[in-house]
Image 1 (cartoon, rainbow, N blue to C red):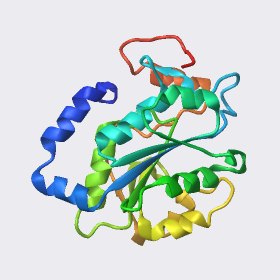
Image 2: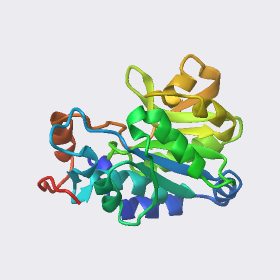
Image 3: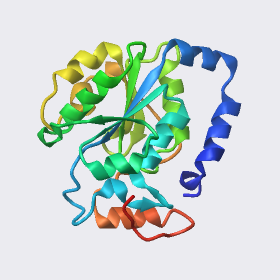
Amino acid sequence: FAEVAIRAGIEVEWIRAARPPFERLAAALLPVGGIVLAAGRSSRMPGSQKLLLDIDGVPMVRHVLEAASEGGCHQTVVVYAEEDVRRAIDGRAELIFNAKAGSGMASSLQVGLRALRPEIEGAMVLLGDQPLVGSRTVATLLRAWRREGSRPAVAVSSGEDGWAPPVIISRELWDELFALKGDAGARQVLHGRPELLDVVPAPGRPDDIDTPDDYAKIVRLFPRKRPRQRA
């Protein structure tokens, strides 16, 4: 549990020190953009917008976007639907408003893909309610996706389902993502197609927060407990 609470600055320093020249070259040739999905409703968190819940003094969603940018994503966009979430980001990433967020996750994913720059070769999809996904997790996935012979997608190994977000998806699969509707996401594109997906162990944990109990468990992992607050 100590590892998941490492300070972001320490993680970034570790990543920079650990990257040999060939990894920096691969990063330049295969840039990846991070898409943080932060437009969902907190249906199982009564009275709260869960993405704004305090995790070690910072709104939850900011942990995720900082992991993406500090872990090595060339561009980070946050897809949002509520003004409070936009304010919580406070200029730390590109903000993309999804007017059709109520139609489901697919629309937010597609809005994020359209916002990525033309040179981006892969999209890393992150959920805004996964504060334990740190920059080391992101860096590990980037290395795995860029290595020679890798498959078009790579995700974190996890539990009974086999994998969990974050997941990196090569541009060659984006047309299939644009065809999704409703609450469908990358899992629907990759399900039953093992030839498309590499699953790798990574530092951090892909736990998401859906209920008050989930939130309480994650808060206990951090050394200082603070009350919930809106940013």
